[in-house]
Image (cartoon, rainbow, N blue to C red; front, side, top):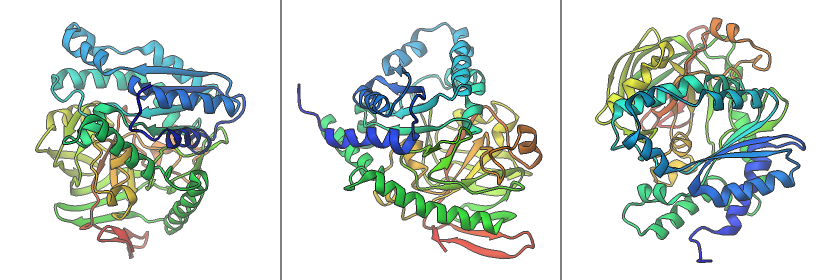
Amino acid sequence: MPSSPIDQQKLDKLAEVAIRVGLGLKPGQDLYMTAPTSALPLARRITAEAYKAGAGLVTTIFSDEEMTLARYRHSADEGFDRAADWLYEGVAKAFGQNTARLAIAGDNPMLLAAEDPEKVGRANRAMSRANKPAMEKITNFDTNWTIVPYPGASWAKQVFPDDAEDVAVGKLAEAIFAATRISTPDPVAAWAAHNARLLERQTWLTGRNFHALKYSGPGTDLTIGLAEGHAWKGGAGRSRNGIVCNPNIPTEEVFTTPHRLRVDGTVRSTKPLSHNGTLIDNIEVRFEAGRIVEAKASRGLDVLVKAMDTDEGGRRIGEVALVPHSSPISASGILFFNTLFDENAASHIALGQCYSKCFVDGDTITPDQVAERGGNKSFIHIDWMIGSAQIDVDGIGQDGSVTPVMRQGEWA
C-alpha cells in the first residue's frame, strides 16, 4: 500500500475519541453514521471502535462528490423539489429507539459553487423538510450524537490551494489533529480538562441570567435578547437518553437560545460561510423585532436569501455562541471553509432552529414551552461567524445593569 500523508496512529486516536468522547457510546446501542467516501479510512476505524465498545449494529450511509454533481448536471428539473422522505423517516425512527448519531465531515466545501443556485436552494429546502423529523430529535438532544472531521483531498486543496495534494492533505490532517486534541499525549484526558473549562464558563453565564447580549464593533451594533429560562451549554452534555456526549469534535464554544422576537440592530460577518457547497462572504444583515429585514453579501447572497426564506423561522436566530478570539482554531490562522471548524474560531449566531436543551429544564421542556419562552423553530440551522478581536460583548441584566462579557474578542 502506498504511504499516506495522514498519521495513521493519530487517525486511530481520532476514532477512539469519536466513540469514547464524542458519542459516549454504550454497550448494546446502535449507531447510525454518515460519511463521504473519501473518509472511508476513518469510517472503518470508527466502526471497529464502536464494536469494541459493545455497539449493537453500526449502519453507515456514504455520500460521493461525483454522484452529487451528477444530480445537478443530469437530473430532471422537477427532481430538485424532492428528497428521500423514506430515509429520513427511518432515521427519525432509529433515533427514537436510542440509536446514536455520528457524522464525518470531510467533503469539498465548495463542491456546488459552480452549480445553479436556484437548484441548490430547492434541493436544500426539500432535504430540510424531509429531514425535519430526524433533525428535531437531534436539536432536542433526544439521543447522543457527534460530528468529527476527516482530511479529504478535495477539502484539503480548498484550504491549501498552493500545495500538492498529498502535502495539502498532510497539513489539513495535522491541523485537524491539533484542533481535536489528538496531538496531545492523552487525548481523552485532554478532552476531560477542556470540558471542565467550558463548564466553568457556561455555569457563570447561566447564573448571571442575562436579559440580553449587546455586541459592538466594526459594522456591528446588535442586541440579542435571550430566551426566558435559558441555560448555557458547551462541550460535553447529557442527552435525554442519559448519555454524556460531545456533539462537536472539535468545539470551543458555549452557546444558548436567543429570544426569536428580541433581536435588533446590525451585524457583519467576520469570516466567510461555506453553506452546502457555496461560499457566502461579507454578510451584513439588519434585524427588527427578531427578524432579518435587510441582507447583503459580496458573494453567495442568492443562496443565503433562499436559505433564509425556507420558512418563517429562517430569518430569525436559534443559537448564539461565544468563542474567544484566541481559541486554538482561530490561532491557527487557517480558514477551513467548514462550519465545524470556523464556528469554533469566532463567536457566532445561527439562523433557524433552536436547541431545546439550552433551557434550565431542557430535559423535560416541551416544544410548546420552547416556543412560549422565545425559542425559534425552522427547518434550517445555519451558523455564521460574527466575532473577532474587534468585537466587545456586554451582558444586559434583568435590571438593565451592564456586565462586560468579552473585550476585543476575549473573555472579560
